[in-house]
Length: 110
Image (cartoon, rainbow, N blue to C red; front, side, top):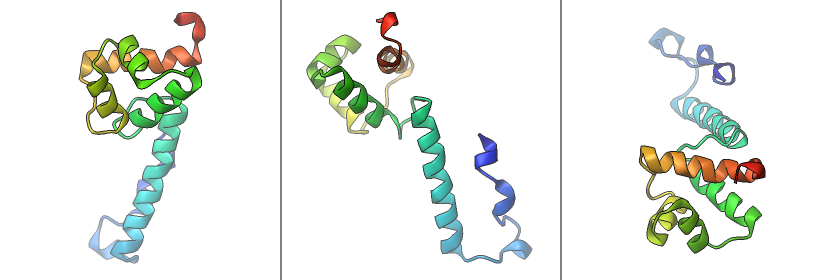
């Protein structure tokens, strides 16, 4: 994954700074987007990817937020906050959310 984030392209030394601050930020943001896309493809549960993964899983299963919350063993309010990206689950709930998302990929494990 680090090959997608080439540190040698970023001038950390003052003598090496040949690009503007705005260009550097734009380049970093482009790499961040690539890393997040890779994480979503691998279904890695990160604060930035959890909402999309939950919505996608729910849509593919054709279930409501209330049903998803029930399957995860959490309140509807908590589920909604996860899906909106307002809150990220603690460690034990993170494991449940990962199983919920992975179950769609491997229906035999349901």
